[in-house]
Length: 390
Image (cartoon, rainbow, N blue to C red; front, side, top):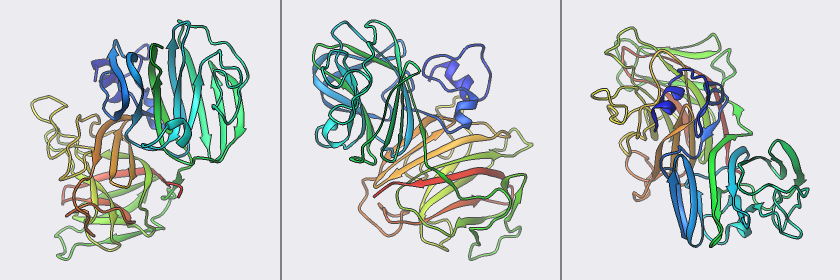
């Protein structure tokens, strides 16, 4: 990640926002980057199109037909992206598509082709025709797509060109299309999940349950609702939801509190654990410590990691200030964003097991917050979740 991106994601304000970054306000509002401007982390190639990155632009102008898709699926969302084509440009953005099969058939294709006689640029091909608006070749254009249930709204360069309904696909992957010999470029690809419901009311611990370890610690965890946040000190301990989820998108804000610059609080977010099971299920680690002044060297897996499975590729957050965390969990796939930057992309290939500590678990479980040890001091707020539609 470029230095300017790191500054933005850790809260330093710059005079102008750079491509492929989020502002603090966007990250706090739940936006996540799908393209970091430097790598294909979080994407996978389908077909024989050759994709590359040049100067922060994701492009393809060679190879056979193909598409690049996210490794994480999404259901309801607002998607924004910039795109640019040549005079004969013919491409598209795939929405809610399946990993297998033709993406425009399993999901939707948002057209990038002015010359199509029925479904021009801005249309959902073969589903909803958009208003015909010629998008000048050789110039950057911006799509903003809102998908909420069967309701679709598309804006091109700020102008609404489509507003309609189609119920075919309720969730799936985001994809970028390359047609042979038709150069296409993309940048600023970002998404905000929609439809998340709060699971903390900001006033009390209603809907949550304290789970204590079998051996009572010298200083048991103390959980309180203070100033719109769940505050915890001491531990070990655990606070878990009364409800359970299997596949979901979870967003929350976390703050690790410390007065010692050499001590970084240790905590985690557990999921798919059996109710009442102490520190059960998968754990998304919370620990903002790294080695040798290098944020790409996390200590103890690092914030956003899937503990004991895969380390975070970068420590994005810092202590003593709230950071936004997003988890997308579906089937064996798990991804985590911190302040909108994707740090984890994990596919659990272990044999199935009732315990996520031992193997792949896809069945429903609680969401739990961890109090790690006597030095624990954390706050959690804006906790919200949405299950994937069946």
